[in-house]
Length: 459
Image: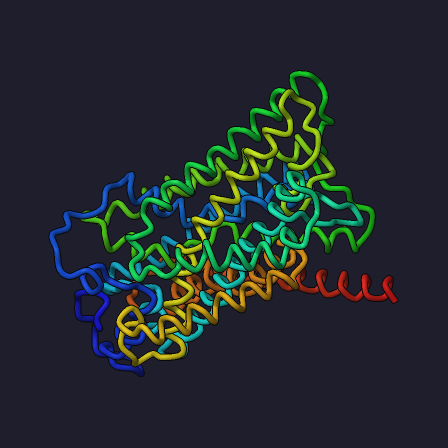
């Protein structure tokens, strides 16, 4: 089962036909699933839309908490810095892929580091995407059933409308959502079948951003909001370590690398890939900065790890409860519609890890059903026991996301399998690896200390 045209050189530990076969789950080709048909190439705007959809997901909900921790100025600068590093890492992947006529991230890792390189990437994509799925499920639970933070309970939509009951408790609501919303959406075998729900999900995300900004501006004009802190409050070495826990959340918000090749492959003019990536990252960064700034301005130090949970209180504007419900409903439906897009890549990569030589999963109904059902069950159970999206983002961001987004691209450019890396490329690659390893090691260390500290307090 091939994933693209072109015959690379015959070097490497694994034959190139084998690498193409093994990495096919990273990039299903339209022609393979739908039959050969005329296709004149994706448009510039369509490619920007698809990549932006990949980027903007649940990460936007945790960014206001990062701004609260870092302060307005360092927080916005970090959003811009991570966007620039993301653009550089994607550029590394695309240039190497074009030079070697490679059509997937996994194939490129296989060409550069052999079979274990491919496996490492697929495993990272599985970990990253399953973490994102858990985050989506937690957000749905927070919005519909409510959440408790530091002893304060934030009511969910159903609880606010009907009062607390067994049927609108988190486990029951998430189970119903899994069975009647997620299961039907993830049962499609072609990603193209979800094109309309994907478009709707982006429109709903825009609704969230516009309403949040509008409310914050009105409150600012009325003088009913506190001026947020510009810089973090540092009162000791522990508070400095704690600042690093925001880094994995920022990294996770920009991970889109596993979809770049599929977008690149559909372009008639592949020289457009670089401006497409730059345009998409600029668009998403603008959305991230606007959402983070206005949400933090609106809620101040009361900003929660999942800012949607803040929309259960009096916003001090007319029709406050209506705006609260519109914001929460619009974004939770957005999350429900994005869920199958990320799940699609998760299922394909997991299948590629478990059954690398089997026929495509879309042609094996039994395997398709078992893997789909097992993944949904694991995601549902994890969302019940993981208390916060901050915890999930810190784990995936400090592990798989940083590998996919920065360390693997930097390692590829340092190995330089096609002899295209410049001195600047290699200096940037080393810098990315050092920054990624140091910042995320400190974040994990800080998380471990917090866990130990809280357990001692509970004891």
